[in-house]
Length: 117
Length: 113
Image (cartoon, rainbow over all chains, first blue to last red; front, side, top):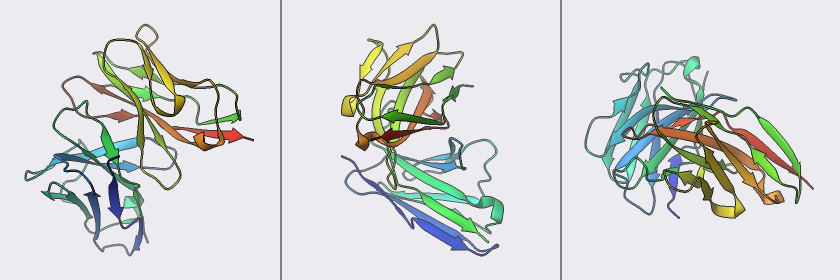
């Protein structure tokens, strides 16, 4: 089946620094990629939707200047958490979808745990 | 706006016993529904989905779910579970014309030998 990888799987950083998380579709081309955030014992919350070659669409309440998303190719999307603070500590999950139909399956990465000290 | 409720955060079940994981949704428009499974240290995998048609949907690994519009439910069932079914299960819903998925909080299924 289609595989999505995330790197790194976990990262610890100091407050005020920036962290980049990569999401790659390994064996397929993803027209659309999604970034989610998951807090303990809570559901996945969609942060943004990105289409290759265009600007990401952010959900209400998500700061686009803080969470920079780049979808430069059909196999790679990156999420950069700028000037990270402890409240940004969370589990970040990406998914990738083949084609443009919203009913197509999303293939999920294993997630990246970010801890900001 | 739609929402998804998974009332059971944890469900322990003996091996070879049947299981039902509950999912209820709330939406003012027609929805499509998914069940995803997350094994330890892995990404979410699609178990099954309902778009339209037959309300009984069969998925992978012997799971099935039934869409009940009147009760706004999409419960997941398996007649006989195995140790390998130990995982976190997420119900998700979307509305037609909108690609955003809304997830429930997940149910941790633990199989007792």
